[in-house]
Image (cartoon, rainbow, N blue to C red; front, side, top):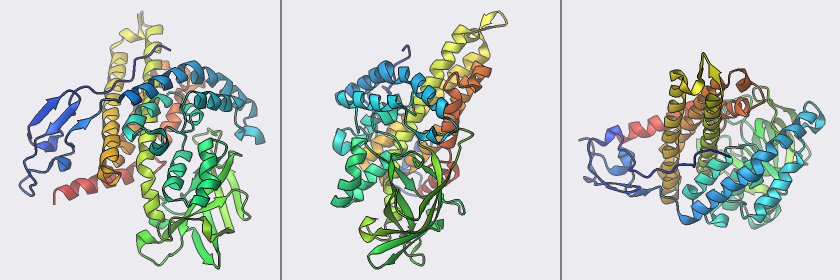
Length: 456
């Protein structure tokens, strides 16, 4: 497939406006701030507060280069050619009880990916890849965001759930649920969002998890629970309140609820702007659902902390896939502009179209740099050290992807709104991610709070 290679920055990361002229030492892909010392109200802030970490290096390692090139080849040779088969299988079953069956081509791709060593690359303890190294692989998978991530067993919400089980699960929980997830033989869901409260504030959650002897009894409603419609979804990580009267961030806990547990009902599958994904986004009801106390993840009252721990790497994955989607949208936009003629000239020669292409390229490059910086910060300073950036990329990447895809749709005209290209579905996916995993407004609130805190 003809397309430009994924670029990695080779120049220095530019200083932000708040840096106030701090001198830089430039060296290839590094940018080092010469610190003036820790200051306060005089405006001379330490390097981290100015938004630039010392010695930031985005140059890909040899291992990352190898995985990324192999992922590109796998995408071109196997994934993109499989899209037509995948879409045809689903179209035949749309509106029937079989709508959530998995197209067989996905299992074929999974076998090929495993044979090529492209499997579970998201989990550093297994793949050996850092978040920064995996970022480029995730971007390539974003060219086909429905098929490619699952083909390499790096699909949401399973990645976040596997990370959670890896970090907080007991040996028994890992054996029962983590191992089959890593093998790709089952899928999972994360049940947090609720229909009756603003769930972007986790302290609002109303689902109750009360202990009775050796069991937890769960009562409540959840919705937009991704993965629930897929028959392979065998386990739910459910967040609810074990101590409603406790401190705000110690009220919540997480428990494991198998799909076939009595009292757990899937009441409906929710369309996303009219689309039904194969894995589904569903509304659930828990009517006195009983599970053993051994199904608790971590400790009672640790649910909020667990939820925060699973967010950082997962946002890197989402945002790099969004950049991959935007890259494919640019590729399609350029091809269309070169192939179509209007008013006696190719669209590519029209000034307004050139501006759309240029603006798209600029925005994607900006977004990629911010995500790579965030991945580097997580690798070197943990999620807490990247709190501002993690929130920022979750705002920036869906917005930029929406803008780029929208321009590509515009250049395609009516074809852009149809299923003849992936653009319409890409737009739905990107727009949904401005709400999934927290709405823009919550992340903007986090960035503003962090920024205000630096100036006090």
